Length: 251
Image (cartoon, rainbow, N blue to C red):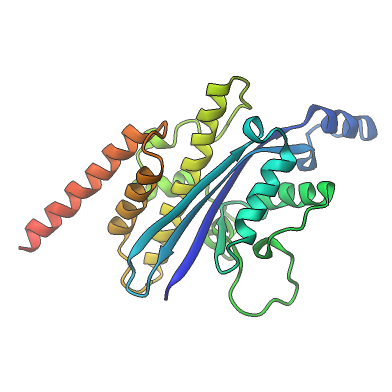
């Protein structure tokens, strides 16, 4: 079945003012509340799968607080991006527990309407507009997977996953670009995991290694100067070599 997917990721950090104000109201609270986070970077990556399982890569977009000046601009740009693509399904990882909660609070603070894919729809009928792959993989079990461990099982090189767990808010311009690259790369890693899962579920014509190669190649066409470009090219080369070996064996 043809699918139009948009993979999103955000990076957020604790806001000292919000955290301080909440601590004043609840001195016994030992941890920062998720509502005290503000989004500094957001990224979106469009991927289509046709009826024969062929994968094509569309737009890769990202916005930073450094470039857009504040959280409101970052969030509004992401929302507008999704709003202008109402036929696309949004895919996140852990989004229900974190990204969507921070995005929702930002929308409330700034009086911004959420895009159709993220609006709460009690009693919804028909296809889901937003898929949290983390919840999909958990299913009815108790164990959540980190995206890094899922990616490792899908063959993503460890070098592309280093530093993923903890991203420090940048200060200098160059550091902002590095974190932007990190956020963009996370949408690619999420896309790899999602397509591998779809292939495992019997998606018509979809083959995992061919799909991953199409994703990495398309990502590099959009961001040939990406900070991880060298590692991504090496990754793509390894996949190509593996597919060539399979063709030779089949011959």
